[in-house]
Image (tube, rainbow over all chains, first blue to last red; front, top):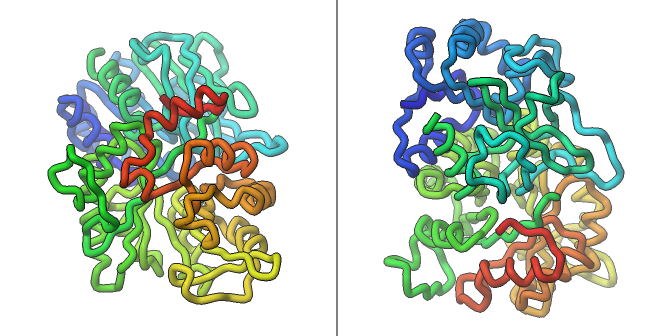
Length: 198
Length: 251
């Protein structure tokens, strides 16, 4: 059973639909007790960094997610949910969960580079953790900020878009992907299968 | 590298796909959800569903359609038709739409773009624009092309971007339905004038037309309807062709 954190940010239905397609049970969790009891956690997110962190803090979810992550529960952050795993973001002033140290940075203004980075792009996999069977891939991205991890050992994969940015992070039982596996068809299904199999 | 996108467009009327669709492997060729799922299996990168008859009363139909699509598709989709307010969009996004598209309502009240971008983020807002070339210049048209305006295409797309549109869906009325190729020259001008992605629409007839719109037309995505609906071009074959032509696509 995968618990999808419902804190009012993002399209949770798409994630549960995708899990259903691959035959994985999931539920939405919207209080501290339910998160405490979770076997596996998906932290989704669409919107701004500060708005999301304020909600997680107000609801008391930040602490319980951190506790769960440090006690070995697999956690997968998706899109903004991945960025929340970082230390802080150039998008705002709130502190992140700091589960995988790093700063969330805005894409540089380069000539001809369209922001947000939107569409299907390849992840060059450096850590197989979440990417078994996905050496060849294309995932669907929509974002204007990217994760810049402090320790390169935490890079799970990188993607080329004007710069070569970190599109996936991994530290022990904690994973983050910048793209949307729930919108990435067969590649997304495989990635979520991999997470479900942890 | 970011892949160029292939986007089938499904016109919806009263919850059903219009335009004769004759796929033998569909139980119900008029069912937009089933047709969308088929395109998704064939490798479509996104889908656009446009309710061509959307009225205020039918807005609920659109929301339930969005819910059904979201339940069955695992690629992003845009939904549009008759959207005039933040409330209209709210219900569509809650129903699982990834993006919404607005057209005439934004021309009539440009602040709508700002409101939607502020409430939902630019990435949700696709600004669709239909334009026609008259005496050498390109002019925005409303209501599916029936009403001419005195707004220049390039002025309008730039203003839309400034107001917060996240993507432009540009249809050349002069090319739409001709199957003689996209409006590459003006598409390139639109693309170069903007820093947001441009979806080119109107005129697709051959695989080469897609190559041209991605290279000469500098489009980020190519949209078509009938050539996919009538199986004149298969999405899989189109992507194989584009890949051979050194255009990055998702396979």
